Length: 84
Image 1 (cartoon, helix red, strand yellow):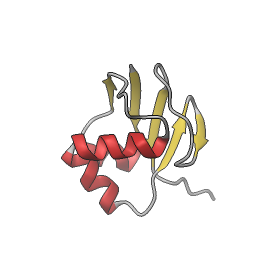
Image 2: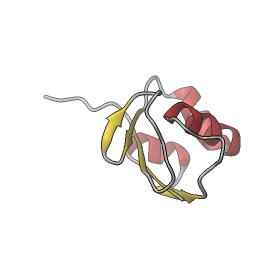
Image 3: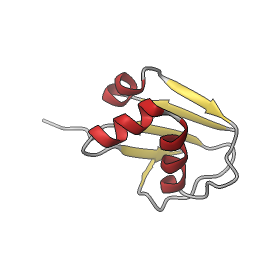
Image 4: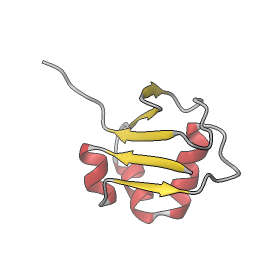
């Protein structure tokens, strides 16, 4: 099982706060998970196509596309933060 959270503009684009999904057998990395979500959800596909950049955290640590994803992980998608 994966617990997925969507924050800020990502949440608005996909229309929900998060998902709980069975761990897909073809997912080993963040890139694999994004590919899986894009294929299974039109709103996620549209959001990823429209957003210039989306950050991803696995178990509360920001990671890149090559970051490992395992059953039981908590994944968060959020737009880049700006500071001031």
